[in-house]
Image (tube, rainbow, N blue to C red; front, side, top):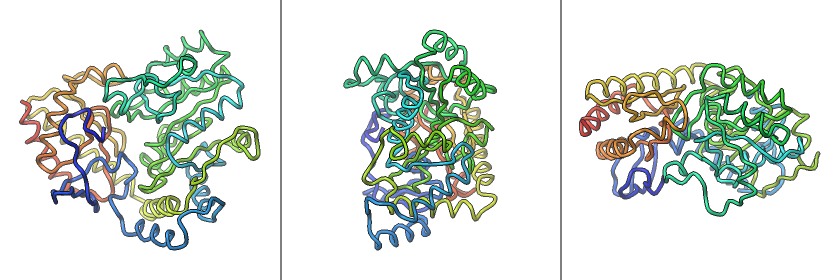
Length: 406
C-alpha cells in the first residue's frame, strides 16, 4: 500500500505531520485521514505525546528489563478492556496476534485455527491465507513461503456468515484451537459485524472448547475506551491490541484472564519474548495518548460526530454527482466503497467494488490536498485533531474529486 500498489502512481514521501495535516518533501500540505493507519487518534505530533517521548528518551531508550511505565500501561489496559485481566506487551500487532494463536494452541493442544476471508491479522504465516489489507490490494491472498502444513491448519470462514463457521466446526471441530476475528473488519475496508454475528461466535467456540480471539489492533481504544468488545458487549477469551496504545510508536499487546495468561512463560510453558517489548518510548507515547483520551469525557462522542458528518457528506456527494457507492462506518472508522450501490458486508462484496474508480478518486483527492488510504480495502480515520472546518473542506474537495469520475 505504501508503494501505491492499489492506486498506481508514485508514492508521496512525507517530511512532517502536525495535527490533522501532513507535509511532503516538496512542501505540499495534505489534510490527513489515514493517521498512520489508525494509531494517531490525537493527530500528528500532539505536544503531550512528543514531550513524553523526549523525556523517556532522555532516561534511556531501552533496558531489556521491567520498567514502572510498562506496568502502568498494563494497568490502564486491564482497567479499560473488559476481557483483559493480565497483559503481555510486544512490539507490533503481528507479534500480538501470532502470540495469541500460539497461546490458544498451547492451552487447547489443538493445531487448527479459523480466520475470516479478508480479515488481516499481520504477516505471520498462519494469517496469510485469504488475507485482507495489503494482500488484498495486491490481489495475492496467499504468500510464497507459507508452508502447506501451515495452510492446512488455517481454516477460512466468511465474515458475517455464521453458517460457514458451523460447517468448519462440523468438519474439524476437535482440532480447532481458536477462532480469530476482527470484531469490526478494517482490512477489507470497514465492514461492521452483522447483528448477532459476534455473540454467535462466542457461543460456538464455547460449545466446542475453542478460544475466541478478538483482534482489536485497529479497534482497541479507537471505537471506545474498551474497544469493539465494549461497544458490542461481547467478551472474547483473548484480545490483541496495538496502534493506539503506542500513540504512533511500535507496540502491541495481548491479554486475557489470569487463568489463560498464566500459560505464558515464565509462569507457564507457552514461550514468547522480545528484547524491545514494552520499551520506554512506545509506553510513554501510549500513556500520553490515553491521558489525552481520559481527560475528555466527550472524546469518543466528538469523534463519532465528526465521522458521522464525514460519512453523511460523502454519501450526499455521491448522490449529487451520480456516483453509485456506499459508505460503511463504525465510530471514527469509515470506508467509501465504489460498489455500484450494493451493500458491502463481507470479503466477496468488498472485492466486487470498482478498484479503478477508487484509484481515480484517490488521485483526484490527493491533487486537491486530501490524503486518503491508497487502497479500496482500508479505512479512513478521524482524529481529535480534526475540526468541523476540516470536515467541510474535505467534503468540498471530495465532491470535486467525485465529479472527475462522473
